[in-house]
Length: 203
Ligand SMILES: Cc1cc2nc3c(=O)[nH]c(=O)nc-3n(C[C@H](O)[C@H](O)[C@H](O)COP(=O)(O)O)c2cc1C
Image 1: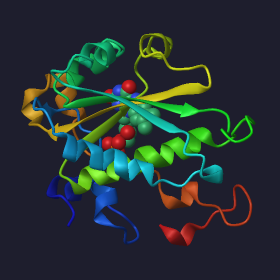
Image 2: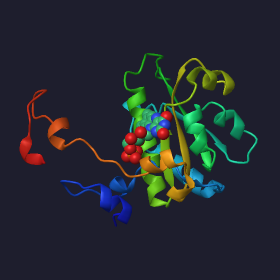
Image 3: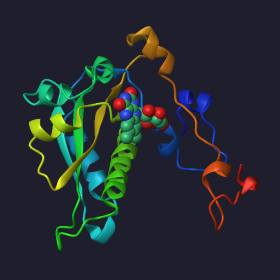
Image 4: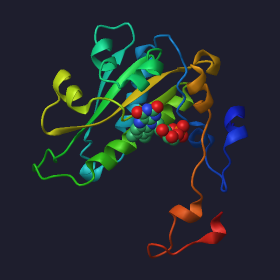
């Protein structure tokens, strides 16, 4: 079922699974902890993503709120993200192995593979009534140093995970952005046969 708030703001031109459209990235979280059972189902979903040669380059470094590791991850964030991530239940740094384990050759698609794993996690979160929010707004070098990420791995992104809170709990500026956003039309992103070939009838 499509969430009423999503229904008001997003529309699809073709039928899709409601889990996909219901996923969005809010910034208001209820400042509560989540248990390992809930959290590890998210990592389990990520684990089943496809990857080149089944190389599974994704790695997830997490910290739960009120845990000893929380500040190490929280302190990586830029101030803009700190203001709303303070209430998240879990922060995760996603890193990705750049070379194949079996032959040491560079994997052209490791970030693509790791992106698939992140989306699996995000969709699983929707199914569990949780929300996720990916971030590039953090100090990548500090993440590598503070979390002791080996050189074979690239720091890709961070995510905040939690329970969606009330919009009213955010600052006025963030409240204006607390709304499911939309997307480019299919006619702009899908091309038949050659770059630039439009398929107008799909919108
Ligand atoms: C790789 C990546 C980095 C992002 N970085 C940030 C960020 O630093 N801060 C933030 O508030 N949102 C960030 N976002 C959230 C995007 O703005 C958001 O996903 C996009 O607007 C689409 O909206 P939706 O996720 O609600 O569908 C990021 C998303 C992705 C995928």
